[in-house]
Length: 115
Length: 112
Image 1: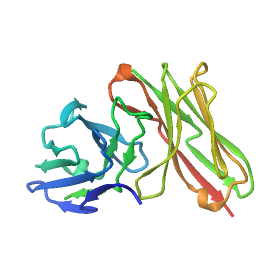
Image 2: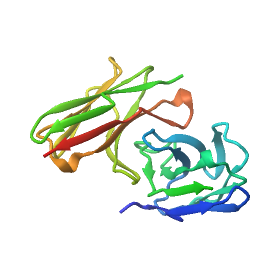
Image 3: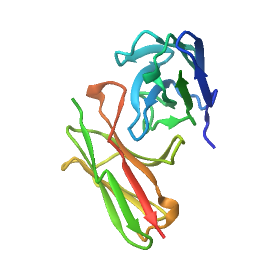
Image 4: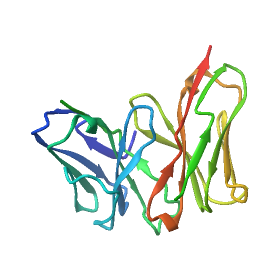
């Protein structure tokens, strides 16, 4: 079982809706990530939070807004999305730069469908 | 730009056979990872390779790393149907920030 928990597992939303994806980890990791994955493609990095501060934004459109309320939680706020934003959204965590292996642990993902 | 190339991208093999998946990357790296992904599921960490010459084995899978050649291999021994999945290698390099760059993935189908 994964130690990174994502909710909801499935989300269907219209283009005018506002929704949020949530991610939680209790491994004491200090880096958390959002990835987007389209079918039959590798995950694409969206955002990285390191010690609760946004450290990387891979030029993601502003309709995606990340938030890290504390070291265990990571949110992705969604607003005015487009159908092409439909994908599997993966949250991951790692020990961060000082970690022994830097290994990323992924959650089960939230499958988003934008109508 | 850090590039990671996997081949083959699709592999169909018979049960009991052996095969190797290759992962080449374009610049020096101190860490390489292999992940497995089942359809519609998340990524499961298989191996973490941290040094030149590292070799790790788990069941029918064995991964190795040659940092001089910038090459990692994932060898499958006596494949079974349960190994059918997509396998990704991913490379980490501090020059490119706190990010993991993934290869395109290899879709493995093991036929009974």
